[in-house]
Amino acid sequence: MIRLPRAATAALSLVGGFVVLILYGPLSVAIFFSFFRLERNVVRWDSFSFDAYGALTHNEGILDAISNTMIVGAAAVVLSLSFGTLLAFYCRAGRSRARTALQFVIFLPFLMPPIITGLSLLIFFREVGIPRSLVTVVIGHTVFVLVLVYRIVFTRLQSLPPSLVEASLDLGASRWQTFRHVLAPSLMPALVSAAVLAFALSYDETLITLLVTGTKSTLPMRLWAMMRLGFTPDINALVTLILAGTTILALVALRLVKLPQRH
Image (cartoon, rainbow, N blue to C red; front, side):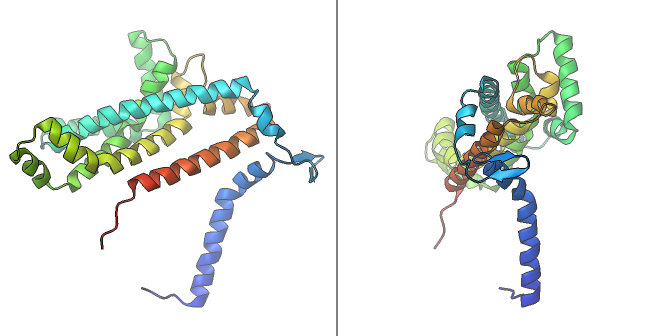
């Protein structure tokens, strides 16, 4: 273990504290003002209440946007996990120009600027006659997060020794039994990680959604529209709840993907 001088340790601690302050300071302000009111640029310390959270439960526009966002995120995760896993198995099975070209196609929407991806999808939907709706948003998000799922699963497959599958088949198991009892448990941490990251990207995606959405808005689009008029106190409550939910989700995912320690 490398021991740093006290001056270097103190300097790194200050830099780390400054970075944490810059990253989480604005969130702390939003959390604070979800409980307290600000009047004439003065904090009313006697105004502690949960009124902002109560107002949030009656904000139908925000609730509808959250519902749409959850539907789109869940659908994008299911589709990207299904297609990404199948594509990972296919590309892992061998090497060929077709597989190399397929990987290029998978990576391309993620590597391009989101506005280019969204514009391309918009032109495609218009040419084939698909009206813009939540369905087109789901397709756009799936195309965007597919590479993330594919890469995580593909990397996990590469780390598995081929002898696992060979031993299972030699012992009389079918290919489905081999997948269910051998490969699936080994892939589960990767699938959980991919699902969490894919949902986070889908939840936050704005530019692609802006171009392919219809009359129904997701949460980022709703907040984008509210920027001109300013945010109400219940948005601070929304930020607090989203932060708490994502923290819990990250802890659960970390718990699920944590590998057992070897003694």
